[in-house]
Image (cartoon, rainbow, N blue to C red; front, side, top):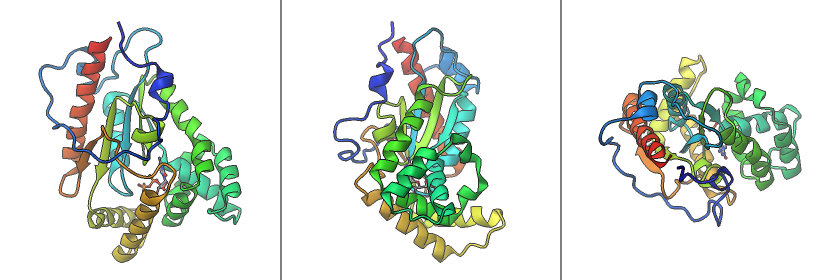
Length: 274
Ligand code: CDP
C-alpha cells in the first residue's frame, strides 16, 4: 500500500509560500544498510523500476545561489538515476532574453510577464541564454511575482509528468524545495563561498573562450545573490528540510557521491512506503 502523498498535495505550495523557511543542518550523507530493488538499480545507474499506475514521480529539488554547481550536480544525478532534468534558471533566462531581444525593460512587470507567457521549453537550449547580461536581466524578471506565476505551471508540469521514459525528475533553481515542489522526495541546497563560486565561474567562462575578469564576475554574483535573496517573491533560501551541502572546499565528485547517498536513501524509503 502506498502512503505517498497525492501529487496535487505534493506539488502545492506550503502555507506562507517560501517566506518562513530557514536553513537547517541536514543528516549525514551516509547510507545505511543494504540497497534493495529500485534503490539498487538506481544506485547502479539504471532507471528505478516503479510499477503500477498512479504513483507520483520521484522528485529531487536542488536549490542554491549562482554558480554553486547545482546545475552540474542536477545533470549528473538525472543521468545516474534515470530522471529527467529541468534547469529552471533557463526559463527565467529565456524570459529575459525575449525581453532584451525586443529592447524591453526587464523590470517592467507587464513586459516581463508577457515574455514569460511566451517561453517555450525549446528556448532553454539557446546558447545565448548563458551570458552574464542575460543572467542579470533574469534575476530582475525573476523578482516579479507575475513572472514567477507564469512559469510555475511549466515547472510543476515537468515534475508531475516528466518526459517519458523518466519516472521522476530533478529540478534545479532557487525556490524548487520551497515553492515549486515543496514535498519533493529529496531536497538539496548547494552553496559555496562567493569567492569560490566566482573563481569557478571565471574558469568556466575562460574554458568557453570568453574573457572573464574575476573582480567583475564577483561583483555580478554578489549583485545577483542580493537580488535573489532579498526579493519578496520566492526568495533564494534553503527549505527547512533541505540537506545543505557547502561545496567551498569539496571536489565535485565528492558532492555528487554525497548527493547520491541522499537520493538512494529516499528511493529506499519510497520503496518501503509502497
Ligand atoms: O546558472 P546560475 O546559477 O548562474 O543562474 P540560473 O540558475 O540560470 O538562474 C538565473 C537567474 O534566474 C537567477 O539569478 C534567479 O534570479 C532566477 N531564478 C529564479 O529566480 N528561480 C529559479 N527557480 C531559477 C532561477
